[in-house]
Image (cartoon, rainbow, N blue to C red; front, side, top):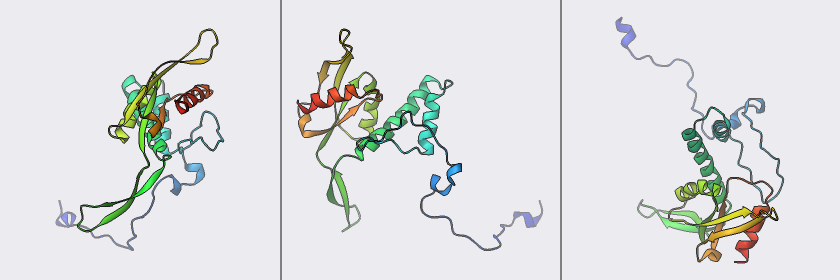
Length: 195
């Protein structure tokens, strides 16, 4: 090795600053951005669809692939559940909260949730979302509801429920990863409201 090759080389030319700010899909042209198809277009003020980010599209691709094994399917589904729970928490009301930081004399003006939270898991599919809620909210209470289709009327019917005693004092997140007609949620909503 020649002595010149061991020396550090200084960059020549004009140095440019590293980009600051958001580096994400916004820096790409629209035709370069990844896209995904949402199953059904929904236009209602009370329905939020997760932003179709490259991360979410990649996760959806993994769980929809026929080559994804069971362990990977569970892992990627849990990631999506976590994103769903985090988005749901963004819709809960908050109150201003000023705290004292570990840095001497410093405070931070933040927020805290207005009231307590609980989850109600629609058995059995909703149980898959419980871990995501527990990861986001420590010691959160979780109730259970079992609804099955009545064989005679073909309508959903409440078969079992075990809910926190103070559920009327809490913000309730209904945990169910599947939504078809919404009839089930209507039944649950009115059942919980009148409880």
